[in-house]
Amino acid sequence: MTSHEKQKSTRIDRRDDVRPNEGEHKYGDVEFADPVNNKYPVDTPEHVRAAWSYIHHKDNAGKYDAAEVRQIESRIKRAAKKHGVDIDED
Image (cartoon, rainbow, N blue to C red; front, side, top):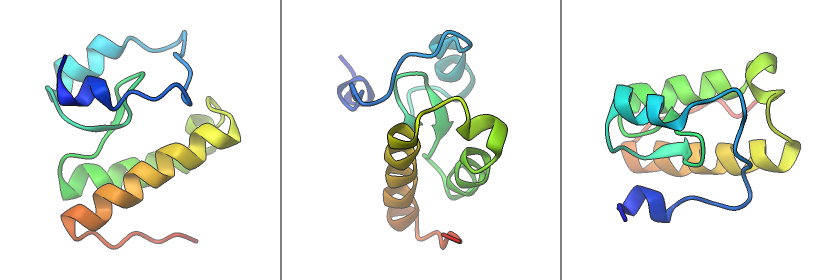
């Protein structure tokens, strides 16, 4: 089991519209803000900024319930701090 698999949370549900292997194939064994579905990679400053932007698009956020969005945001914020990225929380 990889360290990223250990991060998987029961708080985020598996989405029917996503193939988690696609995310891992595209980005490799990296940290994802949604590790269940391998969405929103947060392994680089650029990915952190993109993840923050994408989760705040209504069509993306709408695929999660409010608690799941908060969990994803929390993971992105943690990654932002780790990578020295300032994100606009407004």
